[in-house]
Length: 208
Image (cartoon, helix red, strand yellow):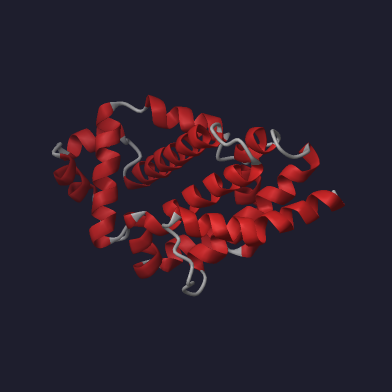
């Protein structure tokens, strides 16, 4: 069962069906956050960046900045889920599938310019979302997202433990101390998965 943010498929559909003006303002908001952070970004800044009037921004996002931020999160998550699902469908082995998921998640968390700025300059707005006592909704969403793909290779009972292990791994590499692992190199990710993750998953399945 998905958590209150909604099913992964619904977020992917939200991303795919967003209109051009909405996408334009979301991209403008992301560029502003990359430069100044979320706290210092005003609706006027976003309007100028998008090349629209302030009134247009408020017409599309009547809830103001809070509604715009909510939409940015929805569309970015939807884009992530859509890309992940498309690549996961092409995986022919469990190792391939795990590499796809880990690579996309690491790329998103460490290579997203706006998110990286906030982690560095406004950590209080981001890191609490990944605190251990608040992980349950995230773990539930990842399990929901990955279930149809993981079930091609593992039993249903192993889906949640597998998703949890992979989520914790990604968070550790994304927000932990600097690592010698090249997070942007698919070959490095493959070596990590093959050497450490796959044996752990095999052990978990044997005990499920």
